[in-house]
Length: 137
Image 1: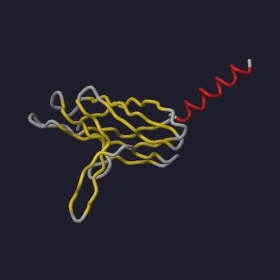
Image 2 (image 1 turned 180 degrees about the vertical axis):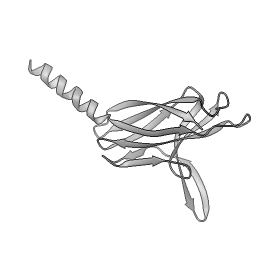
Image 3 (image 1 turned 135 degrees about the horizontal axis):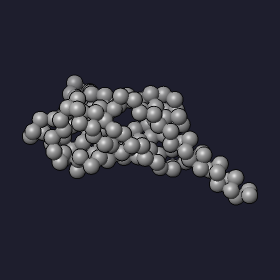
């Protein structure tokens, strides 16, 4: 009985840690020769966590990127993780953090839904996935 209670408590703890709310997910539509685009959204985690990976069946490579000014030049680079402080909204938006989809398998047309999977790691190193359906616009 004690093991069952412990297992239930552990499961509830892991479930609570994985609670990440996604608001306004969208992907920038592309034109025919374009092989990359960005996905944007707002993420709010119930517990301290970080996004450590992303994937999508529409792209060969999916990474979390950061854009920022360095010495008067806008630079974009992949980041290992994106921190999600507990209860604070983190905006993925043009010109800032975003999900970069590269090696697109086909153009993304406005109105299409693009599936994304975010891998989130909690404080105790547990990983969970968050499924996102982003509208192309």
